[in-house]
Structure formats: structure tokens, C-alpha cells
Image (cartoon, rainbow, N blue to C red):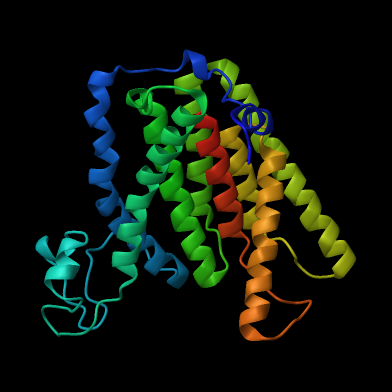
Length: 289
């Protein structure tokens, strides 16, 4: 088991964190804001997960029943509650509603919950009062934004083996912007270096694998996702991110082989969720210190 000191050595503190904006304990109720927003954000993420793999637009057009194509009312779009009241069926045609929407809305709630839990664990390890667990609200909100972004990227990759630039690149830029706002220009240098190092590392691996095996082994989306990770955690944690994501990838591949009972050197495993999980863990470890 890691000690607090060992953990700090493995994944260092966010650069410039001591200069970031902090708030007092009186602001603690604002921690509930991401929990309130999570189901609504999850509802939008569900739309992205349904439409992006189909190459459908998500920036315009009202939500509709996929069976009868009737536009949904405001009540029918209330996250979680409307699904439960309607018992998972369309009010107009009676067709079953894909439970994906409910699953994503509930998963979105887990993002702020994990961010709070990691801070509580950090308080326990460092002997800090629990009242100060979420004293840095802007960083906490940023953690939730990153978590929701990684959630939708992972889900889409599981469905269609794609990590769309329409989500990856804005999330990458958001990480760099966060460093400017919360850490000043001193923190930007580390984030930019992390972004560049992540891209160069995985781009080199992808190029080498393609030259050696004459086929693609690491997609361009994975390259950009590691660059995104560098933009949110800096350069120092990247080795830990790569190591952890590799372990998760091997475990995923082994589980797939065990479940199917077949082994093939051309086995395709979505690496995006493994890499996203490693980035999320690294970020929470940093912000919990």
C-alpha cells in the first residue's frame, strides 16, 4: 500500500497549485452544484454517445423517440426521473427506451462523487480536516469537467473504436485554459510540455508499430488522448499514466480472450477507456494532495 509520501513522489502536486483560488468552508454547499448538474450533463452526454457513432449532428435538432420519431416534451427529457416515471417506455408509442440514457446519467453522477471521495482520502492520508476536503472549488469543478469528458470519450470508443476530435481537442484546450486561470503562466509551461510529450510519445509508438507490423496498432485518437492527459496533469505524471493504462489494457485483453475463448494477434481492444481511466486517476491523485 502506498504511503502519502510515496504517492506524492509518484505523481507530484499540480504546479502552481499553491497559488490557485481557494474558498472557505462557508462555500462548501457549492460542492453540490456538480451533483445537481450531473444528470442533465449526463443526458447531453447520452445524446453524444448515440449520435456521434452514427455521424448524426448533435448541435441542432430536438430530442425525439427513436421508434416513432415524436419530439420529446420538457417533462420527457428530465434526467432519471422521466425514465423511471415512464417505466422505460415512450409515452407515445410504448416502445422501450434505450437504457443507455439512464446509465450515462447515473455514471455522470459518479464523476463528482469520485472527485469528492479522492479528496476525503487525501485528507485522511495527510491529516487534514474533512471540512477542507473541497476547499478549492474551481479545481473541483475542473475535475468534474475532465471526468465527464473522459466518460463520453470512453463510452464512444467502446461502441465504435473512435475517439472523436470534436470532444478530444476542445477538452485538451480546456485543460490548458484551466492552467492559465488557476495556476498562472508558470503552470502553462508544464501543461504544454506534458501535452507535447504525450503526443510525441504515442505518435512515435504508433509509427514504429506500423512500420514493424504493417498495420495500425495505436490509433490517432489514442495519441491525442494522451496529449489531452498531459494538458490536464502536466509532464511528470505521464509515465505513471502510460504504465497504468498499459496494465488496464492488458487486463482488458486478457478478459476478452477468457470470455471469447479465442486468442489472436489481431485482437482489437479499445484502449481509450484504459487511457482515460489512467488520466482520471492521475488527475484525482494530484488534486487530492
